[in-house]
Length: 243
Image (cartoon, rainbow, N blue to C red; front, side, top):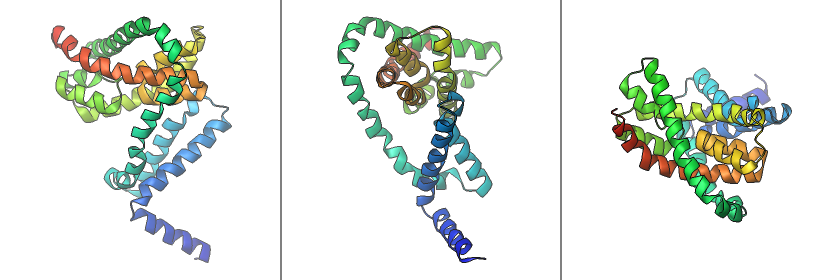
């Protein structure tokens, strides 16, 4: 073994046994994913979040490292989600005048969007023969993960399954959302941002910021408000429908 190979081997052993492994893997995977995204000329099919998730899963499976060991280091990145979410207020403040102008249509859109997103998934899965716990796990699929898991638990769903469904929903929304709105001829970035925030929560918001700061600001607003609206509207609505 050459000195260079020996040094790399020692570094790998150190990282694999240290909480730094999860942090290092996350940053390296995202760096690779973002370079691929740029190389693809910002194609939504190379969404860096989806690519990063795929790379991390592949490494964990190949190295037989448990998710718990990985997350002991990745939790440092997870912690930054809080400040990053609060930071969304900065671009939103710059759009405050427009938010005031569309406040009533925005509220109506949030309520209708949250209800349609939940009920469309619920009845589609019911037609396909899904069990009731799976149905209840699907209801909050478009809500940001912590709140979605709480809603699923309240409805009798399976919170871990809900977490997976939320991530899948966000990835699909990020991959297809902007392209779909182009096909529909939607030009207003505020409208596109609200749609992305309601349908694809945080991952959709990240994609929206890649398009424009205005789209990202409205996506962040819609993501936060739709989580609040969903937590109030979805549980009584589902019980009212007899589930």
